[in-house]
Length: 127
Length: 132
Image (cartoon, rainbow over all chains, first blue to last red; front, top):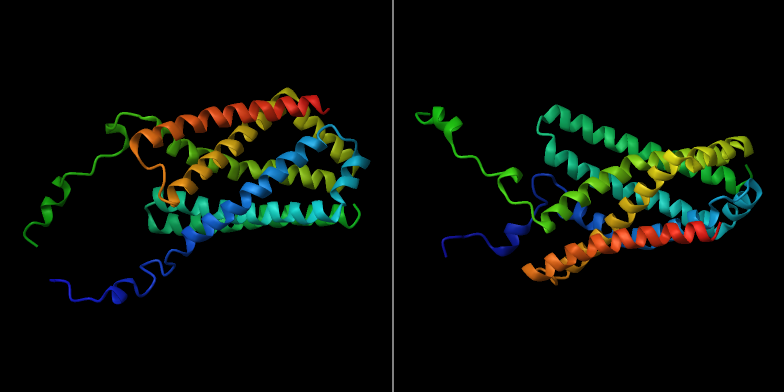
C-alpha cells in the first residue's frame, strides 16, 4: 500500500468546484420529474391547440393545470440551467468568458422561468 | 524549467474528428444539441403564455404565428427535440442503473432512440390534427 490516505479522507470535501455530485444529482432528479411534467405539457398543448380564448382561459384556470404548468416551468428551467452550465463549462475555456456565460445562463433561465410564472398566475387569477 | 519549451510539442489527446462517427456518439451529440435547442426554444413558451395573459387579441396573434407554415415547422422540430431529449434521458437512466452498457445493447438503444423519437413525434402530430 503506497497510498497512506484512508478511503474517507479521499472522498472528504467536495472537489475543486465545491459542489460534489450535487449538480449531477439535481440534473437526474429534475429529469425524472420532467419525464412526467413534460408529458403533461405535451398533452395540454395538443388538447389546447386551436382552442378559442374562452376555452383556453377556462382550462388554464383549473387549479391542477395551473400548478402542473408552474412545475413544468420551474423544474424545466432548473434542468435547462444545469444542462447549459455543463455545455458552457465544457466548451468555454477562457475563465472570464466562462464566468460571464455561466452568470448569463442563470439570468436567462431565471427570466424565462419567472416571465412564464407571471403569465400563468395572471391567467389563473383572471387575465 | 529546462524542459518548459517542450510544452508546445506535447502530443495532444485526439478529439472528435479523428474517430469514425458511430451512432452512440451521434446520439450523445444530438442529445446535447436538442438540449440546447430546447433551452432557447423556451422563448416560444414564454411568448405563448405572455400573449395568452395579455388578452384575446394577443392570444389570436400567437395562434396565428404558431399556426403559420413556419410556425408549424418550428413547433414540429421543437416536439421532436423534446421527445428525442426525453428518450435520450431515459437511456441515461438505464445506464445510471448499470444496465445496457454492452456494445451491442448501447448500439441497439441508440437506434431505438431515433426510431422512437421520430415515430412518437409523428404520432403526436397525427393526434394533434385529429383532435382539432
